[in-house]
Image 1 (cartoon, rainbow, N blue to C red):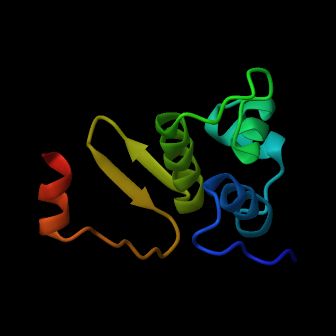
Image 2 (cartoon, rainbow, N blue to C red):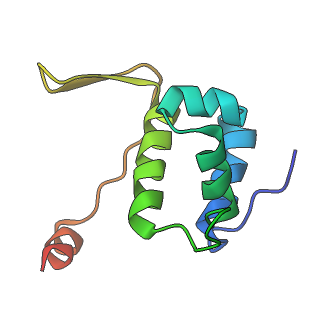
Length: 105
C-alpha cells in the first residue's frame, strides 16, 4: 500500500490515493459510478488539464469531490422525498455556526 499523502498535500494527490487505496476502484469503475470520463478523472488526479496544461478549476474539483463523496458514502438519494439512505455507518462533521455565517458574507 502506498503511503497516505499528508493533509497539506495537493488535493489531486489525495484524490488519487483515495480512489486507489480507500475506495479501491480503478479509473473506469469510478468513471462509471460518477458519470465522468476516465480521462477527466486522470486530469483531476494530475491536477491539470492534459490538453491545455491549466490547473483544474477549484469549482470543478469541488464537484468531483462531492461526486466521490457519494461513492464513499454508498448512499441512495431520493429527490421526491428529499431523503438520503446511508448504507454503511458514517461519521459526519458539521461546521460550527460561526464558520457557516462567516462564509456567507
